[in-house]
Length: 258
Image (tube, rainbow, N blue to C red):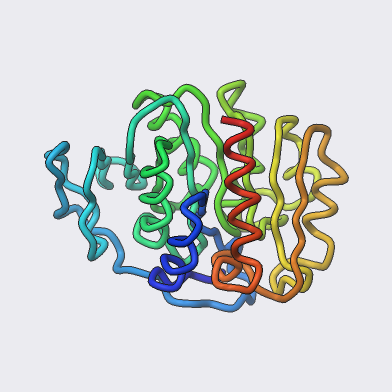
């Protein structure tokens, strides 16, 4: 699935700090347009801040403010926690990304007062996101919104029913069924009964036309569906002509459910 260009996303998101921008997921290893990850893969060395002496991933940018890094090893996948407070967000990247791919987006959400968990993908995607959710809840969040882009989107939709009432909602940007990610049907992505936001392009190159609408139709709960013209997938939607509309929808959703 596609990766995102951090500088482009920063320029798009910078003018609407309302972002609940999300690291996108690339769902399976199906044929999708692929952009390189926006920053180097994390290592176990580096950034610290005045409020934190915990080493963080090496993403080529400082990590100011309060943060906590849970490296891998010993865990199966690395997790970075940003910010404090009861309003949690767990962001899953695309298949070709991880912490560094969505760090700029997560930092903007942190600046808006959200408590963020971002993570690298291991080999069990549902377990990876579940671990990140439990980590941010243990770190002080009281309710969380799950989601992300492509892989992060569909895994968030898939695992939300398992995680109980502390899940306040799910944001899916370019999510759809994927056997490789463990959720192969529309039904498996529509079982969560809480609020969901579904965003996609009309001619998404990864999933069949109408996939997001089919998830919304099968979902027994509040949902918001936003389908924009074009063929952008995942993080590319935040570089496209409808980026501000998408950002506004995400921001509104977060304000309502958290």
